[in-house]
Image (cartoon, rainbow, N blue to C red):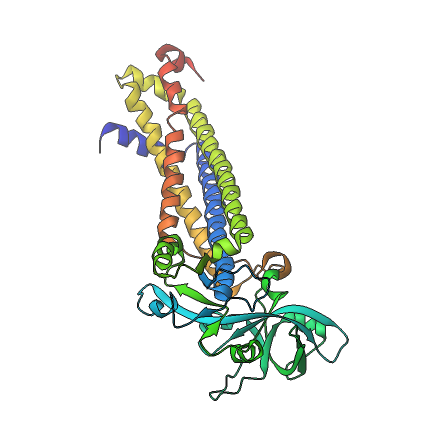
Amino acid sequence: MNFVQFISSRIWYNSSSSFSTLINKIAIGGIALGVTIILLSFLILIGFKNEIEKNVYSFSGHYNLSKYSGGLSYKDNPINLYEGLNPVLNKLTYVKHSHPYILSPVLLKSHSEDIEGVLFKGINQNFNFNSFKDKLIEGSWIEFNKNENYSNQIVISSKLKRTLDAKVGDNVFLYFANNPPIYRKLELKGVFETGMEEFDNNFIFGDLLLLQKIYNWNDSLVSGVEIFIDNSDKVDIYYSDLEANSFFDEYLEKTDAKYIQVFEWLKLLDRNILIFFSLILFVASFNMISILLILIMERIRMIGVLKALGLKNNQIKNIFLFNGFKLILLGIFFGNIISISLGFLQKKYKMFQLDKSSYYMEYVPISWDFISFFQLNLTIFLITFMSMFLPVIIINKIKILDSIKFS
């Protein structure tokens, strides 16, 4: 241990000055509070984004494959499952799942007089139910028939269930705008809830085979195919490859472009959080500057004595920088302990609830991204540590005689 480190340690462990001890505790507490707020905000932001993206992708996949159409009806220009991109999907390693669907506008009515206009989304047994099963809150999923007859069951949202005053097991009437009009009596099998009005207000699920019969399509024709990949962060990367394998008359659309208002809102949250982080870091840095200035002013006489003994300004600065370094490390350490503990408790016990109609989820979400977590800690440390070089500049201006007289 050199002389500078020795003096720094003596100052750090010297408990004779209750004022210095108090200042150190305030510094550590201030940094810990700032770090806790930043890290918890980060965990919540990542959790919120992941939950929203999960809701959207579980409902619509990462891409939607359909056919270019100038028609106004969902019956115009179906795609053929045995042509174009769809037969290639099974050969692409990054494609995790895909399933066909058919859309049709319908009027929905139960025993009550209320009628709702919705989109009937016809699916089959290949539907990616694993990503959607946590959205099913009542009843059970559609039981698809293995013969040529379609299933007479549907699944609707909890909002539509309340509007229609229906319950699981009731018969529900669907009216299709064909020429002539067609109606079907189906059984309400289950109820889902995503928390997102774009889906809950507008869609119901039923058997794809029913719509093929109503549209008079053979088993190879559908409205489109929803495609799921193994990593949502690579949507833009895989898009070019998928588009290269598609036919000229097929339209491949990214889900984040289809629901651009949702994803643009998430980007806006990123910018707001960045501003929030910057303000907290500014406060933490200002706190460190203030603390070091106080510690320097309290030990002006010591600085004068050290200068008289021949220590250079940079050596004296290092004494205070070493102590500031310890304050930052302790503050970050306690901030991490608090934020990780609170994050773990919220993740496991869901203590803080939310209004689902406003936030799309019932509780404050938490997601762990340890690489970003480490990078954020490193950023906090570097910025607060760099801020310490500002107050120690005052040491250059302290004169030996004036400082020794200082009391």
